Image (cartoon, rainbow, N blue to C red):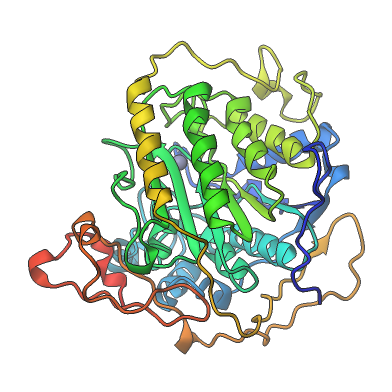
Length: 474
Ligand SMILES: [Zn+2]
C-alpha cells in the first residue's frame, strides 16, 4: 500500500488533477417527506448534468461502500447509531423518548431507508478520504456528503451522521494537520465542535450569523485549550456578493494555508449560500461560489469536496456540476445539454444564473474589520503544530465498486479495524466563549487525534454553559 504519495503536480492551475467521484445511484430515491426542504434528488440531478456534460469520463466514478456501524461509531455514540439503525416510520410512535433525546422527528425526520442513506453518504466521504490517503487521487468528491450539523449523539439541521468528521478522522491517520473549510450559509457547528480542542484540525466556517440557524459561529469563538486559534468563524450578513465574499475568503484562507500548512483539505461546498436559495439569504453566483473551490485547489493539497445545504435544487445541481468541472480543470459550457431533468432549468437552460439585486448588508468597513480580526488571530499561530507519529493506523477498508473499471480483488476486511469501541475517542462538548477568554483550567489533553487521549471538560457549575451539548463529555 502506498503511504503519502500525495504530492501533486506543481505548475500552472491548468494542470489536471486526478479526481475520484463517489456516487450511489440510489441516493436520489431517499425522501425526507412532503414539504421538506432537503431533497436528495438534487444529487441525482447533479449526476445527470455531469453525465450529459461529459464530465464523468474524466474522473474515476466510484460507488461508495456503505459505512458500517463501527465506522459511524468512530465519531457517533453507539446508542445513537443503534437508534438510527432501528428506527422506522412505523415504529417511531413507540419511541417518543428516544426521538426527543436524539433530536429526530421534525427537521430531521424518520423516513424509509434513513439508515442506509446515512451509510451511503458517510461511505462516500470516508471512501474519499481513504482514496486520498492511498494517493489514489488528488481530489475526491462526494456531493451526497457535507452534513455538517450532525453531533456525536444528536441529529441536527437535516443531518444525522457527520460524514465530514468521519472523513477527517480518516485523513488524520496519514496527515498531521487537516484543514476544514465550510462555505455553506450555515455555521459548520458539528465539525467545529468535534475538533474544537485540537490543533490537528483547523476549521474555518463562513456563514450567516445573527438570528439564524444554528446560532453558533461567533467571530469570538476560536477554539479552546490546545485548539485555541484553530477554529475560525467568519460571520456574514444578508446579501453578500461575490466580490465581498472573496475579499474575505482569499486573504483568510491564503493565510491559513501559509501558517497551518495542512496535509489535506476538506471543503464543504454547501450551495445554500447561492443567490436565490430557498432557505439562504446570500447573493453569490455559481462562479463566485466555485471560486472558493478554484482557490483551494490551486494550493495542490489533497482535497476532499463534499456537498451540504442547498435548497433551490436546480441551482444546487448547477453549482456542483460547475465545481466538478473546476476540480477537473474543465470549464463547462453555459449552454446546458439536453438531459432527463432539462425542464428544471428553464426558461434559459443555462448553467449560470445571475445574482439578484438584493441589498448587500455587509459594509466595506465591517468586512475589513472581520478580515483584520481573523488575520490577527492567525498571526498568533507561530508555526504549524506537529503531532508525534509512530505508525500509520490501517485504512478504513471500504469496498469500492468502480463503475468504469474492474478493480479486481480490492476487497475489504470487516475485521481490520484497529479501534475497539472502548477506545472510541470522546468528543468535547461545546465550550462557550466565557471559557475561551481565560486560560484552560480543567482541561485535559486534546481530543480527536487518533493518537491522543480523550478530553474531559469539567465545567464548574458557576460557569456552567447552558449548552445542550455539554453532555457529550465523557
Ligand atoms: Zn446550510
